[in-house]
Length: 304
Image (cartoon, rainbow, N blue to C red; front, side, top):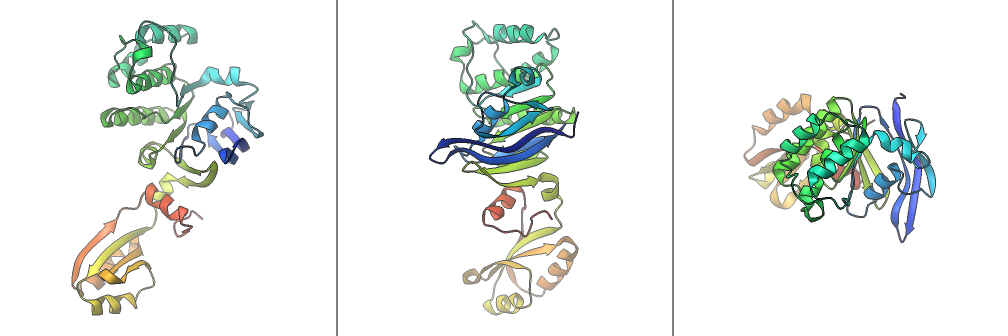
């Protein structure tokens, strides 16, 4: 199979009044986990439905393993596991009846993996699907998506309705599947969730891609941010005028934030030992911080 397993090429779906997605282009390699984050209405679910072949794009093209995602949807769906944003079940008496019916339809004869997922997610399979809570429906959909060991999984905000414990368990499952070589595309409103399991994360806003971040690059960046406050204004002024790596000044509070190369951190600490400080702290730099800066147009951490 080609390295570019899934290709989204200049795709647009315009619902009018700024709704939809516009000129979306990226690709996903086989075995890669890619996340997409954005506010409600940013276009995440629209893109998921385009990938599944449920809706036709106005322009552009999506291919999955060299097949047109819309024209060949019946073929591509056979090897895709999918958790939709809106979950509806057929009118069956219990979750276990639904899951066994789905397994039979997919030709699954070994229910062992499904059973393990049911236990891990603490899913009550005796419940009537139509009356399940949002969280129970979500768990059932997750089991359905993974039970046939699909090579590709699309997850549309899969942690919605789950409590913190079950959210963590799902992320463990996603990471395990990724390590097995499953190709994953997952949407979320939580950057933190995606950062834990994805190789790259797409920032979507108003239907357009603002940035695509390499998570490993962010985690291994060669800088650290430090914030500190001087007890005396004179010391603040003296130190400030000796630096070229200041990224934020708060003169009212005698506070500075510096962006320092890892190799220069010990030098900074030695210099600051000559001053009286009220506090000194490292600011955690993660994907959330990165996207905040990118929204502001700050290119200091942009991958070259």
